[in-house]
Length: 91
Image (cartoon, rainbow, N blue to C red; front, side, top):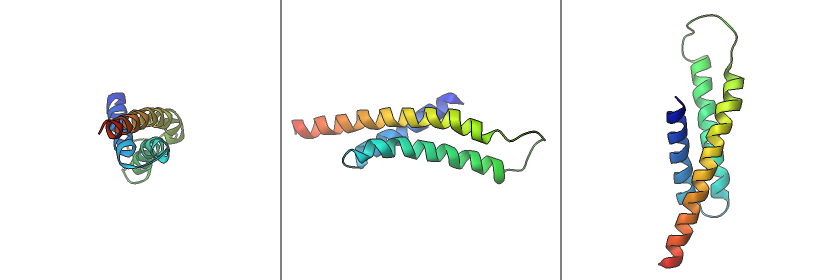
């Protein structure tokens, strides 16, 4: 499960870092995976039928997994932004 989260967050970060110009690309690279994780958790919480009782743990999952997703996306966006700048400088 963690590998899926990390790979998709890195992919979203690279896309944001490559497409969005300026320093905003790094912020979007962190925000998009975090919001994607939130959307997935809320989808599972409210739209998928419940399979048992118990307390809802989605806020804790968002705190932990959302932070990991945002950190991975931020790093991937920063690397992609630097690579894009280096390619443009050499061209």
